[in-house]
Length: 581
Figure 1: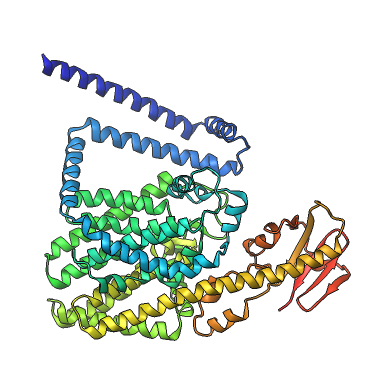
Figure 2: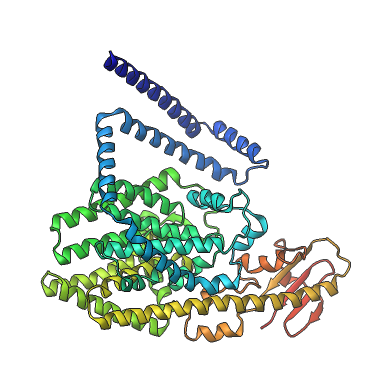
């Protein structure tokens, strides 16, 4: 009787799921096929938030993408609930997850995490102390918007609401940067744990410092609003390797984690494959696993990566009219794909080469040599073969560190997009210091000490540039106040020419660290980047707005003020500020 009742309930449940699934699929199809339905949804969204929705065309395309994602999600849920094979997969994955989690002593992670959190917090201290609104931090602080969904960073959107405890953002620094330091600390511990095959040493932890304090991730730490989500993108790329011994669990966690990475900050897209390639090589070189097992691991990693990227690209990526605003996610046309990838690789190499000082480049080359020596001496493969493969491995890891950006027609080469290079260094450094000569550890730690010191240099440079920009802005405001004393609250159209350049101290730093000039914003001037003048325009209650309606440089206006720092031309209602020095 009880069995009959149970079967009846199961049958009813199945039919309810089938009916709800059909309704969901039909709804998604209506959204995908019928433009009027999408317009109704957009209109409803506007009513909910109390304003008109902008970028309508982008939202129309986005809703189609979400509709496909909804259909895929419904069919996936139905497969795992309604089919015997799906339920068996779910049970297998649950069992594998429990096995992996039970085999890990998470308590042993606490002290190393606290240690690395202290290291990263100390490294970020001068950046936090500078209290510098970095680029679009200005917009977040002044207007309280989020806007990460424009770049399909949905996890960032959600976490920002939770962390800021509001839908409108405000400056709550240094809390986001403290969270970022904690995420970086966990990432370092998991990376060392993974490379060390469950063994964590403090030397290994110190060797992992470039993961969070490379000059490239320092820009990420500079963002008061974005920093924690950029750090989470690294963590999400490393977490799957806790489950690497169980293929089904590894595949599921990899896909979910990679989707989280894509929805926090896509610049981390190369990190997952960096770790996967290195682990496969390390197991091959030490002959801990058979070639079949190594290729199986690498194959599962590649499959997981491609599945996650395809899901994100076709089911989650938001179509936006902002694409091409300063970077484009458009992929090279197929006939030009290889040539486009090659050009992006050449530029990546050029940018890295120009950014790093001579001592840094020499240090990296020396550590790469030590890495090769270790792989040859400690490996169980033939020496010549191990030598050749280790050299090829370094080249491959470097290439992989830039991730999927090679595919884009206009990828981002700002420092914040290159922090995969820091993880590349961390992997080489951590492996090199494990059970090897003491001299190798000294060289690696000396190199990381220089990066640690640069973090302080960079934070102080931000503070110097901030003071210098405030000084120059103050002079301009005084001149504007003299020229337009009766302006009251009327907005003043203006344009800028040139920039204030860098504070003198930054010029001195640039002699040794060329990347400093790419890291520190000028904060006043016209460079094509609006954030270079938004601080001046909006932060001092000056009622100014940059006028794009005409080119003031072509207008014959009289010179009203010509001083050491700037020349101001005006027609009485608008002003043209020509910056000097």
